[in-house]
Amino acid sequence: MSDEIDTTVPPSGPGCQECLAGDGWWVHLRRCAACGHVGCCDSSPGQHATRHYRDTGHPVIRSFEPGEDWFFDFRSQKASRGPDLAPPASRPPDQPVPGPADRVPPDWRERVHR
Image (cartoon, rainbow, N blue to C red; front, top):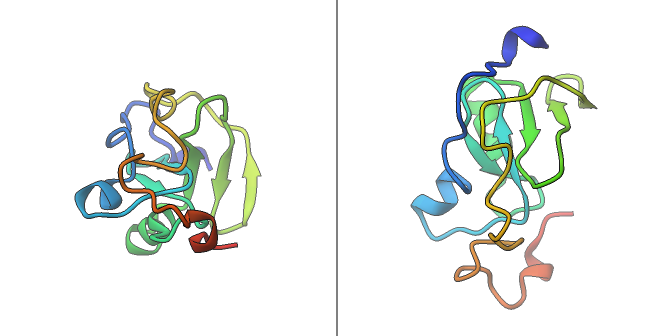
């Protein structure tokens, strides 16, 4: 897995790139370990982290949530530990989950993928 992780590349931003570029919202955030792309998790409506994997072939992501440092490999479907990545290690701690706050619908719990 180490050849698919670049510890020098920073995250693409504080939230899901695609959701922020449009009108989307997310439940949790994931960071591509190869290029830093920040996308939303599979519980989120957009499922942009998985879409990034499918579009690019970058198989390893890391949680982009405060206090979480696990990696996940889409090919093996297994979580593991890995090296520290370039900061920041997570979304801003004051950013709510789900987020961004001004876009989360009141019925968001009914809209998540399970």
